[in-house]
Length: 534
Image 1 (cartoon, rainbow, N blue to C red):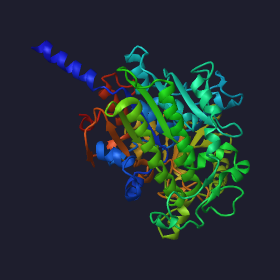
Image 2 (cartoon, one colour; image 1 turned 180 degrees about the vertical axis):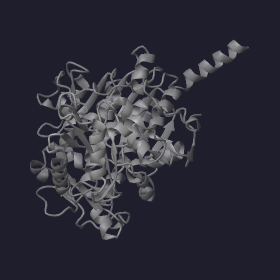
Image 3 (spheres, rainbow, N blue to C red; image 1 turned 60 degrees about the horizontal axis):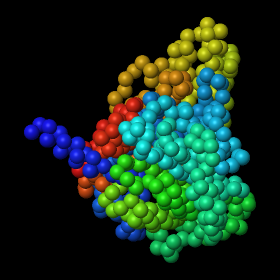
Image 4 (cartoon, rainbow, N blue to C red; image 1 turned 135 degrees about the horizontal axis):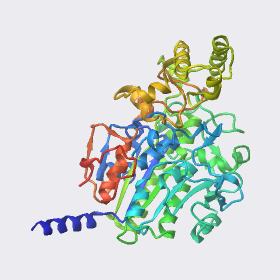
């Protein structure tokens, strides 16, 4: 009887596995975009996921900084920068004394272009993804493919053992490319796609999907809080992308429009066919990141007509993707989750206009004042090696040479910087390494702190304050506007329902791993969300 029960359970687990798992990340999607634009969404995109699947309404990032690289790594590894090592998009490497990019890899070559844009890999990410674990579990028979306009958003989710990651090279090329980390040459289906003219077809006029007068969920089209495109006097609809492309990076202009998301979906659907994904009982993994929502948000701000239009169009793009999955993999045979890599702050100058505390840090004035302090206190400015990502990296060799105590230097700097305007908190690396925090911003900082890679001083600004241009939105903090993002599941093995129970971004990977019956990624700190699974 006991053997029969085990066999029944194993048989159920095998039968309950989806043929394909599709992980969708919408770059810079705040949670409230789901509710703010809900009444204008169609039935087959976001609403289908909510109607047929499970909605985790109180889902948050559980670390700082909330950037694209760390976000994608954390979603798919089930852990935080403290463990997976992707502490930012770019960071100062203390060993080689220079800035590095999270997926930069000079040991590999570009595939599909002569441009250096293909010299990328996941080698700086220390832990596995659930895609890696599925590859191991299936003896490399289950495929893992990563796709995004952004290289880091394709590479980090796919992991180390993936079959391929593809990203978009704009400029004068408009092609999807990869690197020799994955392959020696592009597959025929990718070359065919690149030759199809699909990217060129989107160099057209961008106007609102619906009558702009109905876009009541966003600010006036003409305002002083948006960036816009070079060559157009106002950041207002319509935008003739073909006419503007030469002054805005050629095909790169597509990144700051919803058409870049359409292009991504086109390529993802082509990948399902070209890679024969979801065609047998061995589960495949497809990671798709829609990056253009981030570019639009940075350019126009979270309260813009452009952002609203981008999400209304993305809703239709998701519907098209789901319909393709229904047809190519089969209804009820695949599983999808959708989340974001971070949120975004309302444009601080807009917040100021409605009397909400917000503003901009005068970085040059602050660091000039700090430099004077260091010179007066230590008789040198050589103790500072680098300042980036809200962190200060100290020159350990110089401190030792001057016979100074590192902890004393750190605390002296902390005591100074905390006095400056719009600085909310300052912590030393020593504090992050030696103290265990379990609540508040301190816990988030600690989960984002890599003892080997992070700086010696960590700085937290006041809520609503940024070091950024006075137009457009940005992100990176531990405040709710950056941490609260959607988390939707639907498809095979997923329950129907919703919860306001707090979930964390690191719960996604173990939940998918539990669904597949595979090992959790090796650095996982999250927990499977049992209520999501049937």
